[in-house]
Length: 368
Ligand SMILES: *Cc1c(COP(=O)(O)O)cnc(C)c1O
Image (tube, rainbow, N blue to C red; front, side):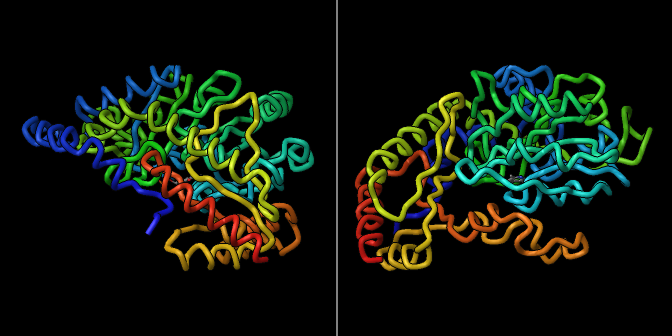
């Protein structure tokens, strides 16, 4: 079997270090919001060149706490993409605001900046672009619209740790950004974890308070908050992973380059667009084909795992029936969700296995 993602191999490559730091945490006697979390926040802020990094329980909470910290809530609208993991929109709804979707660009799968302005209303508070699959959204255009209309920009960088846009790390461009350390993300841990980055001191302090029950000082609560913290164990593991992340991202990029070269002339396959002004970290490597079903079945027959990210757009989810969207409202996102599929991509994918994937893709598309 050639798996789509192999988090286990990634963690096993540093297993001895992981076991050692877990023992350190056990012996430290500090398990929640201790020195490892402080150190991780400091190192991530340095790595991304941002002022503040605040660790939270997971990527979804990162989005929820950020929106809450900016007082985005009831009656507000947040513009986002219909083509993302559900949590992007869910967080907006969770704080009481309404997601307003804008169709995507068919080549990059990002929110289309040209259609943003039409969706801005007096209720719009923020734009929430997603750096989908590991490549940055069109931040200059998004920032320009946000500036003109005095909107916040909150980056959903859950799939894109280490990606850059015009030499700047994602997470250092908008007003704030949210990361996830779910095991399969390019920077992940052995469980759940998340991080928020921002240059705004007030917002950073508010998030630090929100994550511990709205409390600045133990047992004194200034507001209603959350219980959303990163465990010391996960911070310790992430500190080890952080040492590897540049290498892991480089490996992903070179595997992607090989796919791009080998698959460029295969009929019926549309390759992912890689833009010259940004560095793609390939959380996933996604192709498009109108013959998707046949191709994934053929690959599956030969033990090659594929995945569909995402089979249903956010505006068409059952949970969002109340928003009144219909199929056809965002034709590009819907077409992409009908055609897209991911092929094996992880830093430890061996060249023989990658060659097998390529060969089977070539045979599968000739058969169509
Ligand atoms: C994974 C992910 C999230 C949620 O992160 P969790 O840590 O699983 O809560 C949010 N947005 C995007 C785009 C994601 O890929």
